[in-house]
Length: 258
Image (spheres, rainbow, N blue to C red):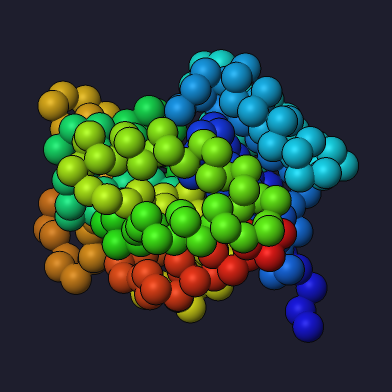
């Protein structure tokens, strides 16, 4: 077998973040060598506390947690060599050609720091973006939550105690009986990228106005005559389809066998 990929998870736990972290710890394809925290679902200090709690529950206090900045910084700005020194950035973010989940234009992670997102997308790093155009295809339903509750897996039982709130939010916000598995789907892209298909092009992020946080994808099929902010920018990969059934199956099996 190939050596597991070493990964660092940048996180703001978060219910589906917790699910993704537990999934990572149960996945032999990868080795979690650290967690870093940032604001999002909660403020940075609480994200750190939650991350430490999750690792303590999992019996993995050997994994270090580094608290991120309380204001906007990007590692790429602080260290220009960063983009070339890492293997890949797999990020959950964007709403490519669908409505956002903060407002019609923007997805939450990108909306939280669109300037930083634009720097990442144009950094030249090997970036793979998993947006809500894909994660909204991966839905855990009531019967799957029941299976988690009935299993002997410690991660499954833990998650069932906090999933009620997540299901209630989706019922109120989307009038749906189920929850989107955002973070776990992005993690699956790192575990088994063959479960998705991808396109490649330039991504820029709108940083001002009513569409602040909008991710716009340029497929580079047309050569424009005028020089613009799109010219000579590096390409990234963007997920476009997903085998939702296979993702749900993988997540369920690994959480129930914990």
